[in-house]
Amino acid sequence: MSGHSKWANIKHKKEKTDAQKAKVFTKIGKEISIAVKEGGGDPNSNSKLRDLIQKAKSNNVPNDNIERIIKKSMGSTDENYEEIVYEGYGPGGVAVIVETTTDNRNRTAGNVRSYFAKYHGNLGQSGCVGFMFEEKGVIVIDNEDGDIDEDKLMETALEAGAEDFAADGEAFVVYTVTEDLYAIKEALEGAGYTVASAEKDKIPSNTVTLETEDDIKFMGLLIERLEEDDDVMNVFHNWENCD
Image (cartoon, rainbow, N blue to C red; front, side):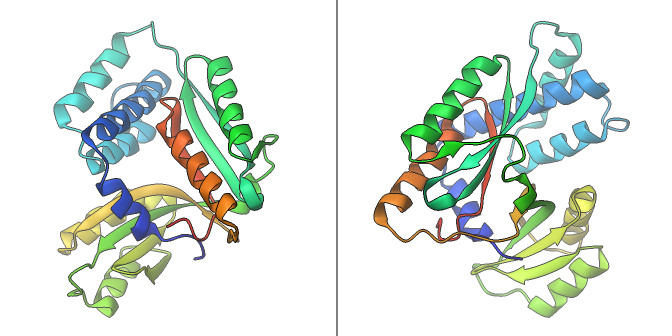
């Protein structure tokens, strides 16, 4: 699989401040709210909710918080969020996909458009870059201590149903079809491996390496500003040298 380092991204996430973690909790809460309104509050019959509960737990959201969000969403008629995806290009032709959840599409569209314009990119039409990405489940296994047997881990992952396997610096990355992500995560944990991250990702079919200092600076700022926006859930791109 091509693309930027998943382990670099995970280490970056680990260093987030408490305020940033609170923002992550809020964003996941929005996603859970939409899932409950669309398919009900029972994760046994609502697969989207079930996946989001797993995502919340992977991000250390307390169980009490998760249950409170579900109960609130089941009884609330005030919050009407919708999911909108924006696509465009960053500096140097980097493809960018921005997934948002918003209760005010005019505000969100205006903000996203301004970020692209300010940091030397441009917002495109729906579908302009989406074809360059394939959705996969991505599981990262921390190997900073270097004590994991790569062959044994790969065998365990493939037997559990994984599609692909790769070493990534001080970690191993297991790729799955999205539907099998959490089942394979549980299988790996059951085999004694510590999972640093398990999430659905969009993997680029090709990557772009930025050469100039300005392009690198502005691309980094574009990603940073997008991720800071309360309406933005996920940012995907094909910038190779992002770490």
